[in-house]
Amino acid sequence: MGWSIGLNENTIEFSEECAQELNAWAEKELGEPVAALDVDRNVWYIQFIDDWMEHMDFLWEKKAQTILCKHNARGRALFSSTEGDNAGEHWGHEFLPKGKKTVVKHLTGKVKWA
Image 1 (cartoon, rainbow, N blue to C red):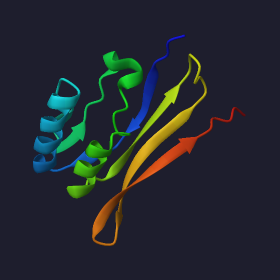
Image 2 (tube, helix red, strand yellow):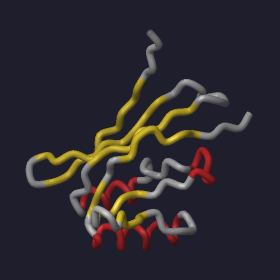
Image 3 (cartoon, rainbow, N blue to C red):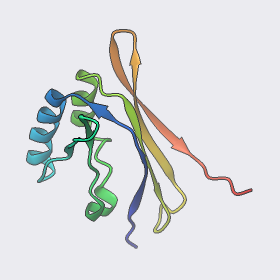
Image 4 (cartoon, rainbow, N blue to C red):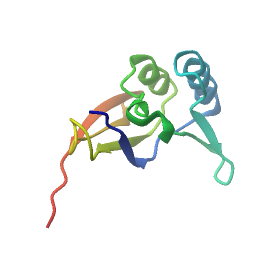
């Protein structure tokens, strides 16, 4: 059974230098760039591509994490699946300052209906 994921939140922001390095990696490994510029705010962010379906979340790739941490990216991306064999799963990646460096924290979540 196939499945696809949805992006619930994306607040990851980074520098132009990070965008250039991330896009170079993404073009080679994923086939197209993933960093985009929000011209209204003059901030770079990750443009997750819906057509990639379950492959949309590439942040589990160690190289992508390394690039974002190296350039002190900040924010988080949260995903969920509502169909397929992983229906009901929620996860994400958060890039946080820790001392003089940035670390990535892997998140899991649960939805509770009230």
